[in-house]
Image (tube, rainbow, N blue to C red; front, top):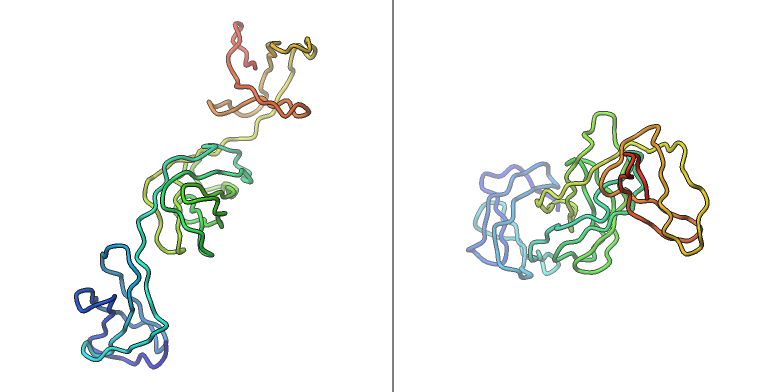
Length: 212
């Protein structure tokens, strides 16, 4: 807005006199206030500079929405270099321009709306000072985030050594063992046979080596 001069009792109103809260002036063009609790609805938004007369504007409305939540991440882990496409499962997601995912309580990335229960976002790279595990939350408006503490785990890149055997029958079922030179396997790791577009879970072989 404009002409928000120094005043003693600035207020915001959300729909009616019952939902009035104190406002704080930041400058002549900016004030802020915290929205009070309200049932889901679209309400008129008004501002008062003195706590008595309110400025009417047909253009200003505030939308109260059902709270959204995050239940599951698929996958729930990925390399520390980032770039993993994560499907975030939850409830009450909306397709807005501010839809975003937050990693480590600070790093924001844009999210893609798929439906009211699924959005997708790409993991950012892990900073040197960041923990390997972090909470991923979703925001619809870029300000308010879910608070479900759904955990995503970063992993070091794996460097594979030898694998054997490297041939097997067309019927499949060959158990392939391999050793890892760098990194550590976690439960969500899989083997991918690229040309066949096929993945197989990783398990421990009889001799203790990793296999799939």
